[in-house]
Length: 253
Image 1 (spheres, rainbow, N blue to C red):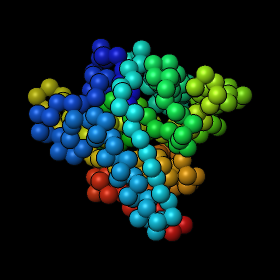
Image 2: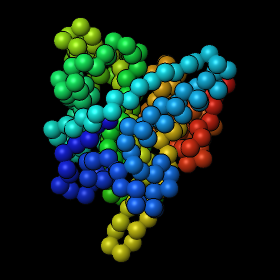
Image 3: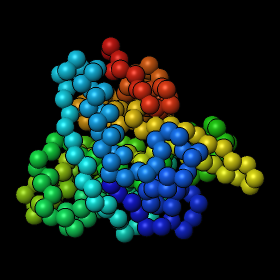
Image 4: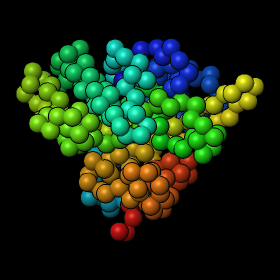
């Protein structure tokens, strides 16, 4: 679980820290507190989903490291350019997060795991807010993405990069799923307030599908839907199907 320095502007969702206030009754999808118990339930959902859709062939066991990792920058400083011209800040986030976790808690047994996941504070840059509001009120939110070694090399601009070294260099992390704590947000403009409510369940299943090697079924350059809500590997299926609560099964294709 990764959070950030308190944000000095309003161009990201939240203030850089996880929602823990249980009095926020307007958040009735993925309600707070967003603590380690909350994320453990998300991993349980992921395990249940893949066990069901694979007829018991895919069995996931996961752990949530309960200590919070606070990075030295704001969320906006890790936000990549929306036009894709500079993705290095997002690659830096992955490296900084694992380096920080390893340095603060050297007893973590990274080598026990196959797949790695960072839940970060705030909402994801995964919903087309321009289509809804005519502008993007939070342009520095972070996109949801599954990193493999090739992606990490491309984002860092280093084709020889071998992964994030941890455990005194004895192990390298070569994949990371990056997901927000929620996809629910409240947009306020003057006296006007509106909300978008969605769960991260679908995006979590979509991200793990990417880790398994399932291909994206949407236009990865423009974000335009392919299979739409009818396939797991289109983000529309991740957060558009039952508000992201119950993602569709992987498509027959």
